[in-house]
Image 1 (cartoon, rainbow, N blue to C red):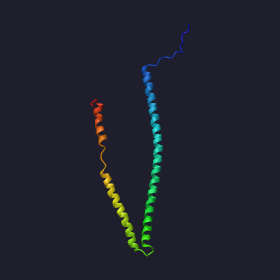
Image 2 (cartoon, rainbow, N blue to C red):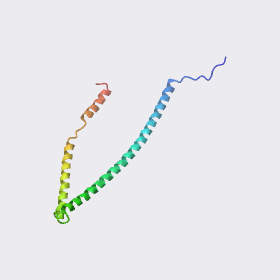
Image 3 (cartoon, one colour):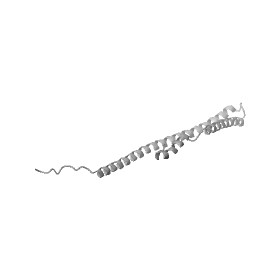
Image 4 (cartoon, rainbow, N blue to C red):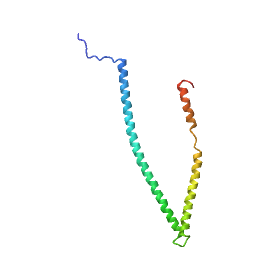
Length: 134
């Protein structure tokens, strides 16, 4: 009777733990690589989107300037309306009024900003919860 030497040995607990650690390490490295590649795509798209939005804001500023000049000349109406200097002062006064209103609204909204009190309180509870204190 021949002894079967092709029989596989049962892995030891130490070997299983070592294999599990290696697999977990590999899995974490792959997850980090995946997150980096996804983040790179998102950051690139976000950067390009930001450039497009800033460009649009720049052109809107140019539009407002040209519109303001056109409005001043419209008020002047080829010399038949108000004087050109008064026309430009009226347009400047309009933009000053809009700016002041926006500043006041912005200050009002900024005063409504408060600290995240619930999140801070929960953050203070974490050390006690880790120590087993409820």
